[in-house]
Image 1 (cartoon, rainbow, N blue to C red):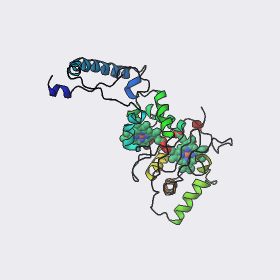
Image 2: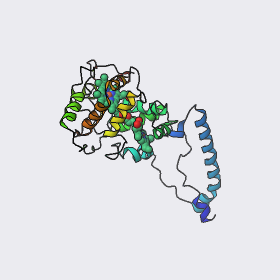
Image 3: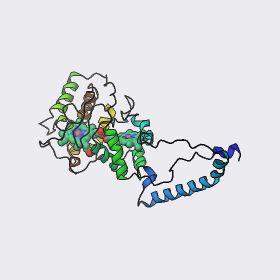
Image 4: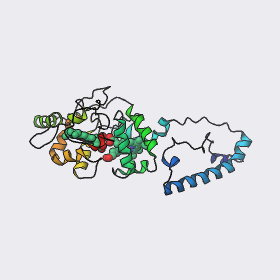
Length: 274
Ligand code: HEC
Ligand code: HEC
């Protein structure tokens, strides 16, 4: 066997073809027709590679390289945008922090991308064919992480902006029927179990874009969609000051989502119920 031929022969991963329910993407695509086709092609290709390469392996007794099939390794693709521990990337970039958000919130978002309810193309693409159980595993994983927060936005707010931003977030605006964000997102904006996300550590651009997306119906959540009702009442300038104010708050490190409250939330949110 020539060295050139050997280059094309992968080191065979132990149990590479065994059924492994933890293998996401095309690994466990159940009933979806297109995914089954992908799986069939992969299997054919694997068998062809195995047959043509087994001679190389036998002749050279290539040692089997140990392959640690860990969840962290499989989530390396996510780290490119969300950071190694889901901390989000860049201070000006759009890639949100996902670490420490409630598991149920993360799970619902992953499902929403898979179903095309949230529309960011790369996320929709990555979630295709991922079975529910795997998405739940990913959600559980990131919800347990607590990496350091980015430095807060240094852009100064005018006194009027600061007062308006702080008032909307901490008290709401009773004249316009806008509830305080902290009533649901927690006093320190670290979220609330089971499905309200923390807002601290999110970038200005991301917060503003999500509120605008709800306002224009581009983002929706399980009905009744409380965020849709709230965003509908926010003006463009309100959205900008809220996003600026939240992004300029120093983060409380080590803070976890608040426990589920027995008190009634100011509005009903479908994602808080099963
Ligand atoms: C190419 C960059 C990119 C990659 C790779 C990527 N994401 Fe994302 N992800 C984003 C962006 C951008 C958003 C926000 C999209 C939007 O505006 O709705 C997002 C949103 C999310 C959200 C929702 C966040 C929230 O607070 O609502 C979760 C959860 C998530 N991604 C998980 C993952 C996981 C898990 C992977 C790996 C399987 C992954 N992402 C890979 C860019 C990426
Ligand atoms: C009645 C409860 C409630 C109130 C009040 C509330 N939120 Fe929310 N918020 C939610 C829920 C529930 C979600 C998750 C929706 C989903 O499942 O997609 C959410 C999600 C968000 C998100 C998306 C975060 C992410 O990671 O993508 C942002 C941004 C947000 N809220 C901002 C605000 C702001 C700003 C205010 C105040 C003006 C506010 N919220 C008031 C319940 C509330």
